[in-house]
Length: 140
Image (cartoon, rainbow, N blue to C red; front, side, top):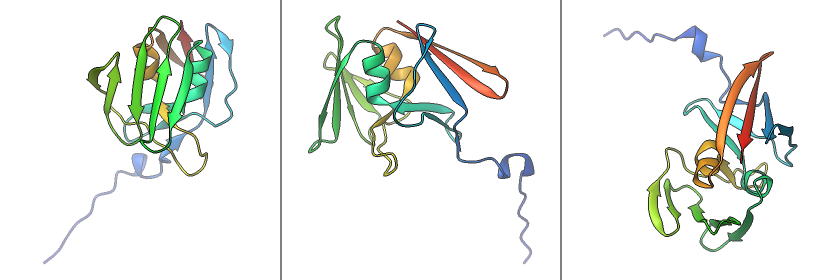
């Protein structure tokens, strides 16, 4: 019996994550305490929850026991996310996210899908590629 394995060389060497990101909020560059990244397998941009929320003027609380993050907007929106779960709650209405929040060992931060969380809070996300760097702008 003979088996053949075909390797797509163009994608085989790609790293799991892409870190060449510049994040801006309302066209002002913002530096995060943990590097945002794009997970190539799902093409999802992850950022620290406090970065996206506090940059948009929201407050964040963390429930260690439940592994749950709650975001409270100044408009009264409440978003609850649980590490590893695609189920989120926006004003107690269940929503399914395309990707779950994660909490990698390094950095020890809750990382969330940027677009989904930003749009749940009423912001829009625009991304462009310039000079081999992805520029992501959040407009509130």
